[in-house]
Amino acid sequence: MTLDQTPELFWLAAVTALTGVLWMPHILQLIVQMGLFKAMQEPTGIHPHDAEWPHRATRAQYNAIENLAVFAPLALLIALQGLGDGLTALAAMVFFWARLVHFIVYVLKLSYIRTTAFLVGFACQAVLALRLFGLL
Image 1 (cartoon, helix red, strand yellow):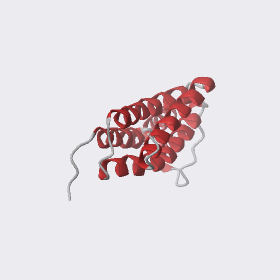
Image 2 (spheres, one colour; image 1 turned 60 degrees about the vertical axis):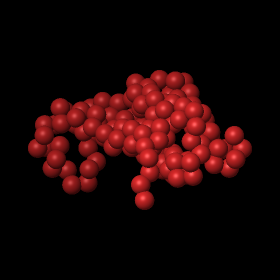
Image 3 (spheres, helix red, strand yellow; image 1 turned 90 degrees about the vertical axis):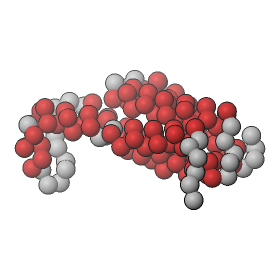
Image 4 (cartoon, helix red, strand yellow; image 1 turned 90 degrees about the horizontal axis):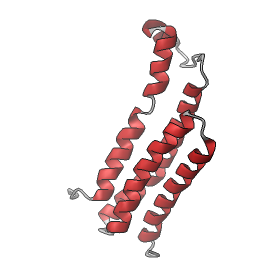
């Protein structure tokens, strides 16, 4: 069985790809700080960072993974059931941008914008869930 590319599936792929690369800033900062070989030698994976932002980047990455676990099944079910329309496509697109903004402002320690971006992403998930339950 194959699914035609729907906007919801496109944005699911984009969110998944984004989430898959959010570890990079944390590791790149560690390599700059410690050097490549020393950064790779710690078997526990717990490295001291001179800066606080890499720790925020890690927390933002974990949050992105947690939200992907909610968004992915919603987007897949929308596509599988053929319930997608302009509203669900918009919600999926806005979810991607909200997650990108969330990561950036989390790293920059802009808590009010971070919370707003998180809530926008949650609202997008709610749109998809409500559509699945026939409430939108």
